Structures are given as C-alpha cells and as structure tokens.
Length: 213
Image (cartoon, rainbow, N blue to C red; front, top):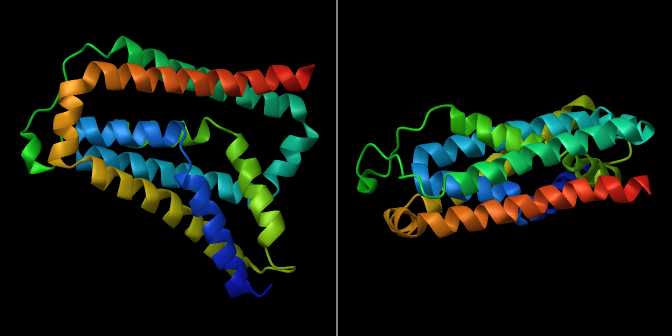
C-alpha cells in the first residue's frame, strides 16, 4: 500500500471511530447545546489535542509498553473509569440547576472559558483504550517503512479528524433551536447523559475486572 492510499485508509478508519457514540460525543454535544458555539468548539479542540497525544503515543510505541505492563494499563483504565463516573455524577447532580447563559441564545455565542477545552481534553484521555485503537489501525494500515514526514502527516490527520468531527457536532448543536430544546428539557437531557456516562464508566471498569479473572 503506497503512502497516499495508506493515509486515506487511516483517515477513513479514524473518522468512523470518531463518529461512534461515546463519552466524547455526549460531552461535546452537551457543551455546545448548553454553552453555545464557543463552548462546543473549545471542547472540540480539547478532543483534538487529546487524540493527538494518543496518536503520537501509538506511533512511538506506547501501546506496546502498555501491553507489556498490563497492571499499568489496568490502572489507567480504572482512572479513566473514575473520571467518567465523576462526570456522570456531576451531570446528574446538576440536572436541576438553572442554565448559566449570560447572553441571548440567538447570538450563537457564549461566555465559555477554557474549562470546556479542558473538559474535552480530559474526557478524551480518560479512555486509554483509544491509544490501542490508534495502534491497531496504524499497525494494519501504515506503509512498510514510513518516514518521519509520514508520521507527521498522520499526527496532523488525527488532530484534524478528532477536532473537525466534534467541531461539526458543536456547530450543529449550538444552533438556536438546539439550545432552546436543551433549555426546555435540561433536567432529562442531563440525567440521561449522566446515566449514559455512568454506563460507559462501569463498562470500562468492568473490562479491568474481567481481564483479572
């Protein structure tokens, strides 16, 4: 497989993975619907940076290190599960709190701070299995002897896909209509998001318990 075809195949595989529902989608969607376009885009950039770090780790052989040290990998997964569980608790606990929007929804802007960027970043890196996914895709689709330039292109591609996909989600869900629906249904949307996040946390923790048997 030549480098152009390899890069295209990697891009398609990673885009499919990014579009799959999970904690990242829940977090970005809620950030955009509750905080507006700026909040959603900040979260998307955080997702892109987290994905970039995992991709670089995979390219540098971090996945092989984790595979050789299963206890370290298990600890990382438990830490990720704990973080997702914390997010689930915060979503459920804050479901009845009034929405803090300081300007009209119709402006399409928000008063979001860097907290949305950090939330996106930590949500992305809370799942260490992502680096294994990247490593699997790279192992299957990288050309036989890629150079430094190709690795750089892959890293840029990962950031563009992760940040680009979630930026698209943010732009769609930060519309006036999406925000109005969120305001009306905030309690149930937040509680459903909390439950889904909790299920994902339990699934991640359960995978550690299952592997220890």
